[in-house]
Length: 195
Image (cartoon, rainbow, N blue to C red):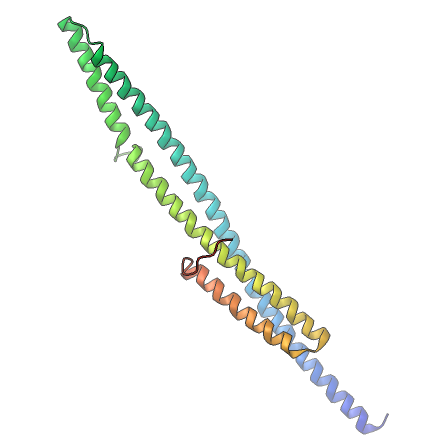
């Protein structure tokens, strides 16, 4: 091998090494984006599950209160129908009916404790909204993670094959992943994703 060929070979090797460093840096950046996306996704997924459990618990409490209220209202109605003729007994039964009606009203609305059926329904709906928001975020982060993972694979393939187009596609996928992650953080309902 001549000196000229040796120098050409060395320059080619140095150029390939320089390109490989750039691709390695691209892979490192994509891996960082992937780690962030995965962390945000797991947080959103955990919040979605927690809010789903909260909403289910609140709706179960709502149902229990509704059943209690219906039972008390039924007892009051039956007492009205079976009201005795004796004035003393009538007053006693009327007092019991009024107590039952107050209890039924309290079961319907109890703002001081937030445990009336009206308040429970509002709280459950709010938990469902929070769950839906967290789920939308999670879907965006999952798509971002997929884009980052594919980007890493394509960037790695660039080193092996030397096909520069794969690095460009990898870069575009990384940008798409970043856009999805940003949408997940700031505007999770901007795109309707049904996954």
